Length: 299
Image 1 (tube, one colour):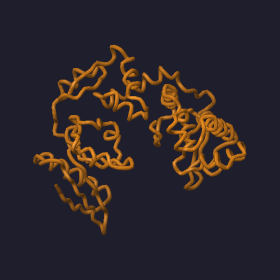
Image 2 (spheres, one colour; image 1 turned 45 degrees about the vertical axis):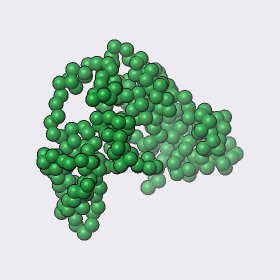
Image 3 (cartoon, helix red, strand yellow; image 1 turned 90 degrees about the vertical axis):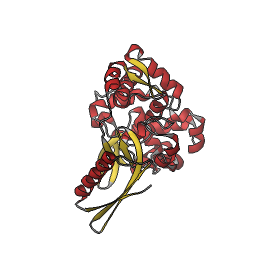
Image 4 (cartoon, one colour; image 1 turned 120 degrees about the vertical axis):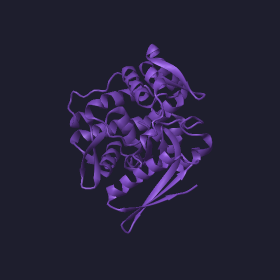
């Protein structure tokens, strides 16, 4: 999902792999072929080779690349497997041909799901699996727009994401929040509408799933003028100050000499209860590290 590492329960793998079947394979897209210097036919050859060579058991990244290079008689295609960003192992994982095995020391190893989980493992039917994924996303992150779902899942087409949401029919309902439009599971709408702010304050870490899935256009979660401070260049996502679900600032920390320095940069003036909540969060983090807290607020 999204081409990033995820830890999933083994018995759910079929759902997530099955849902990938709804998306056009990356290697069929012109941008992918240009970026990686590989034809669609070559990509399929590499993926088939990865599946076949893993029949012998778990392999490290280098071992897998060497085995693929030998099978296809192409060092260039073997290098696509060895690359630090795992170009081809990612696509093999999307197909359900690769999962992580027990590492060899500090080196990761790959194996096939049927060898790791059992021969009866199978991807779920794509449409059925994707419907399950959409339900889960709306249950956790609703209201969500077609754009937020497409970005979260790694789907290149927001229009396709919108069709998949709409395919749930009466299970979903359109909702508006301060002018921002999204979708929720219909069963959750009444409870969401009755909810009121509770003063909940959190210091979320970098790349927190809430921030990954949050709307990045102007919305009640994050105002457009602050977007670049949260969603930074080269895919970096800042740690954020969260107040009742709103991204209200960013923060950072540094450990040095038995002290934990925490700097919080709110986007606007904070209320007293918000400040107290953030300070409690910072203190919890310092206690986790066993350090003394040094807290700084900056604007």
